[in-house]
Image 1 (tube, rainbow, N blue to C red):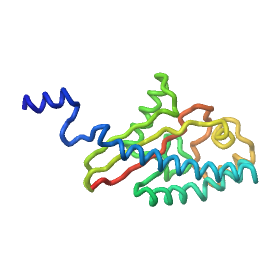
Image 2: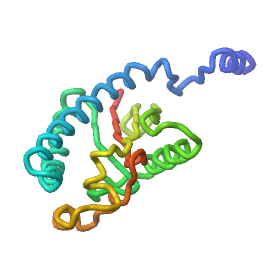
Image 3: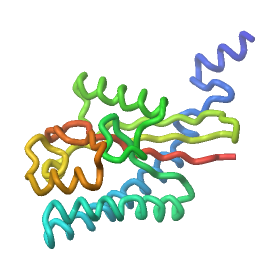
Image 4: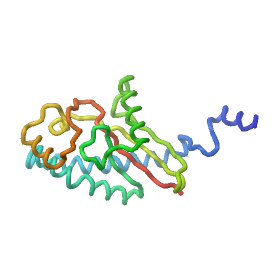
Length: 188
């Protein structure tokens, strides 16, 4: 017992709990998958904005975000989604642990951390075996305000109401925490 406590004290290693070093490969791959997803979605949204404005971008987000997420998830062998306390699509509502992480992101933001740097990870034992979980905050950029801001054009509001009757994802300001990317991966 004393030897185990000494090892924990000296190394920070607790048997059965993943350390940062053990999570590093999963974290890097999660970041790559998120960058791939965000880049592909942003490219399609920018193109839609240039061709048809914000209403066209909403349509693209509605039809393509899920498909891109599935493609990236398959490519990387993980589940990649998005969530928010103020979600647009009810399918993106956070579960309990995601809500806790989102709240911790808000607390960290209030304490002065930049939203773009907020990330969190853990590896836990589930009924299905070990599961790696990673979340990375999504900051509200200036471009996002056309569909997520406080002052939304009437045509955009009408399109949002038709596609997302339960929309909670408006009223944001630039730099706000809009939500988070979520990665889960079974390790066993």
